[in-house]
Length: 267
Image (tube, rainbow, N blue to C red; front, side, top):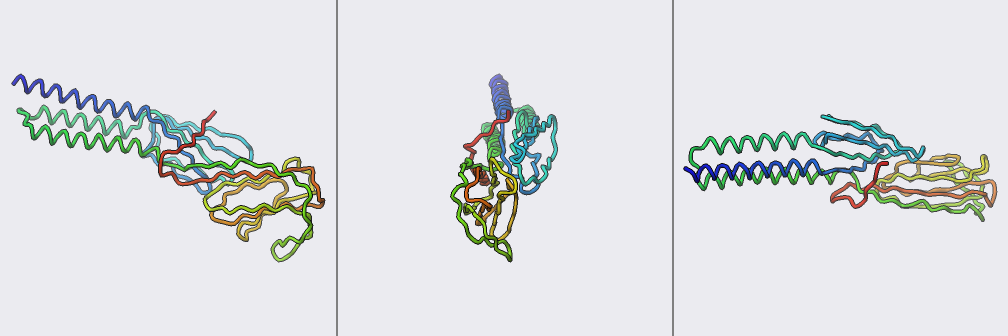
């Protein structure tokens, strides 16, 4: 009888400690998810922590807008933005993990004390069930790291616009004779590209972007999402030498399968 009391006490302590470890592990786990906004994005509440911070990074305005949610957060929809991407930081306690762990601990302890005599086989089976449930929770917590996208940054290279070539450039059904500089890129993954002319002199040049036959014209900058396309960027000018530079910048997004090696900090 004395052995039974000690056995119950030891088992209860082990169950309580294991449950506490899971809750602490979840509380200390912080997720950073990077999301392209080429379409509206749904942030699932299944990994809703007690604090959700969303940074909307706009490459056009070069600004970051911060939105902070606290407490029990439901589903969040982030609107589409052709010049933005989102960095989501989820920290604090996951209420699903806490609730499930507490219920699992309470039921396990209740079963222990509902049995008058603890049989070895019963103890083994109950511990296998409890350990399996706790292990599943641990995998669930770690799986939250794999949401979002890996991001590869191609820093902008400044290209001097000088000694431009004079040639006929087709634009739709027409052709334009102009001095020009051409840059090509084969986009194989979803990318947010930024094309800018620095030290721009108005009315002397403009940008023509050909994305697999889709033509976009702009005076000094173009920002857009491109996926699986041939990209051709042409600077058209009235002069052979411009007192300007061309910058081409690209962020490449890959759906995340393993833990991201790239971390964005929100200042």
